[in-house]
Length: 372
Ligand SMILES: Cc1ncc(C[n+]2csc(CCOP(=O)(O)OP(=O)(O)O)c2C)c(N)n1
Image (cartoon, rainbow, N blue to C red):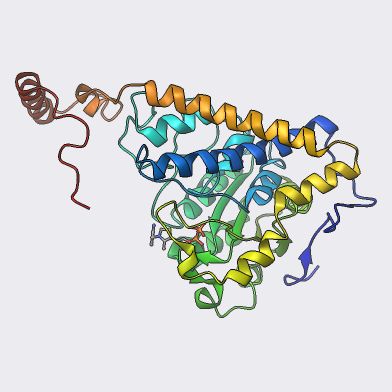
């Protein structure tokens, strides 16, 4: 398979004759429910942002199959080094919408206690889903280092690192790919080519004929996969994972997909994405494509799909109710989880601040806001 040939399994009409997804009916439905949960989270988060209840969210509409298909090929003992746009990977691996919502509201049950931006999840539980970093591409060398460490220790686990097309222009991508190739590290590079890096289209991101072909320069296979085809993503990731686990080294997967929403809920993509492009990708909607496949297996009807989506929205709404009712972090938590023992000068400064707050009272929500 050349680096430029697009791999797909599910035909546009939903048929996948002769393909064995290596998932039972319940496994396929778990993938479907996770995609619906991602979409429901998107819808609810947009309303929360528009009504001023959260700072922002990152839309995932259009990239659900790419993320869930890849996640479904991992074991829970494998590591994920995600980007901020990886809700499908997190939810597939057992993160709950409530845990994500605590971060979105920055409340006292957010594991970072409100010190991070929304969508920069980290989880207080034994899950191999690494906390999200804002600087693009930094997760790439981290994943390679972790994968190489597993190789040195003789562990048979794999690291999957996920990033967007824009992140291939970072130093982290080139150094990570180079080290992984040289060390034959057990890592899978998942480049989600969703068409844009904020407003920068892929044509302005690279002069290369594809992202997958960049793998050749680093001595590893590169594959281009239809990112809106859940089974193709699952198959390609499973092959890359098996190769890494065998000790044969890394693979670069370019998932060709499309971001059907804005970069974030603060963005207006209508100002730079041509209408015709949005319309052409809407016809390739990954959720509808998987529904057609499930229907061809007698696992889906329109009514069942609507009921499952309504259940997903209710699950996210329940998460909102819980997160919104949870109080903000206490001022005294400012040093919690930071130092094994708080240095004396910080303890003094903290004490002075706590005493001042006790005398003057809480400044109240919104006080001291950056004047934007
Ligand atoms: C090193 C660095 N440069 C710039 C930014 C600002 N920035 C945030 S998101 C983004 C676009 C990233 O696009 P891509 O990697 O394609 O991921 P996508 O958002 O499309 O999923 C940019 C430029 C950043 N966070 N880090």
